[in-house]
Length: 118
Length: 107
Image 1 (spheres, rainbow over the protein chains, first blue to last red):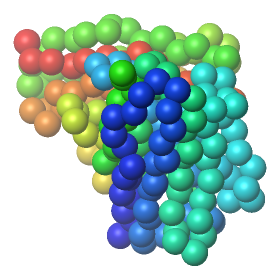
Image 2: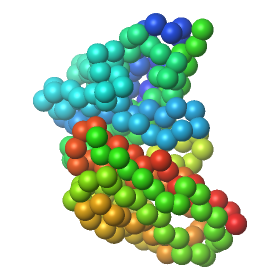
Image 3: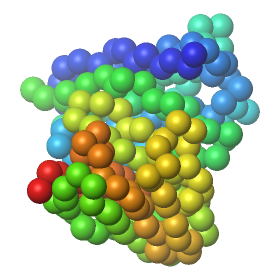
């Protein structure tokens, strides 16, 4: 059974850093395209970043240069390193598995809340 | 970036009603469109991919249509479990973008 479990969210001050993790089971992270999608409180969904099975990465303009997506194949885990955090980064962050490397997501984690506030 | 719009933003309906949600893209996305259902506090759930393909396990009362810039999600007979927010998402090009959502609530 495919499962995605995020962790690492919490309260952080503006300008701070946080690393989110997404532990996968039931499939191999490195063989799939994996994405992060976020949702600000009471708002809609926003795609954040993707890492391809081959290792290429892409980012939304709103996080480019501040966030880094990566994976640890030995741990079958996806990461999102978030630096220079801003109030507008406050959101629930979901990891999700691309279906057949196409750009839509059939499996999602439960989400982890990141709050950026002083 | 490709902008996605949805209408209506809120839809009040009764059990058994036929419901249609429209999604429009700011430029052609062929049929690279997905639909998701989201309930409060939960992750989105994939309903439809490639505009009209029903995800495995999704009830057949859900259907999608359209291509180019205009798409629709139809629920043929609304059930109590269907009251939720629905989002369209284009995956034609990065950055992948979502519509603002349509909330379906009880009339």
